[in-house]
Image (cartoon, rainbow, N blue to C red):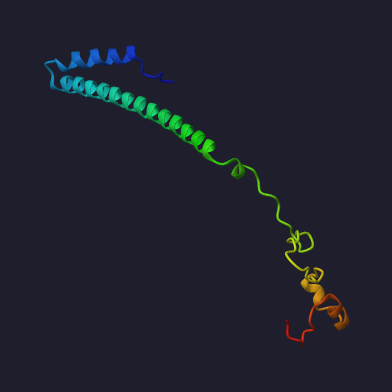
Length: 134
């Protein structure tokens, strides 16, 4: 397994590249220049990586600060869950009566309305199907 290039190994590569780039042979000079170019590129990439990590960390801190500020600015009433909504008409609270009390028919499920007799409809205050609603 090949180990990572640490600073000491990079310096060794720089020394080889510099030595080869001064050789009288064209192939060795080209290899030395290539080694130096690769070491320089590794340095640039390492700097870019360091800068990207620093920017990501700074963005994390800024996002956390924005979230904390947003949490402080939200009214307490919006942070609590709303009261559950009643599921059936019988469970719904009735509005307070204003003025003279009106006669309200008891709550009846729609499926029960069809099965009611005419006298039951009259007793509950609902018109028969043939009668117009008032």
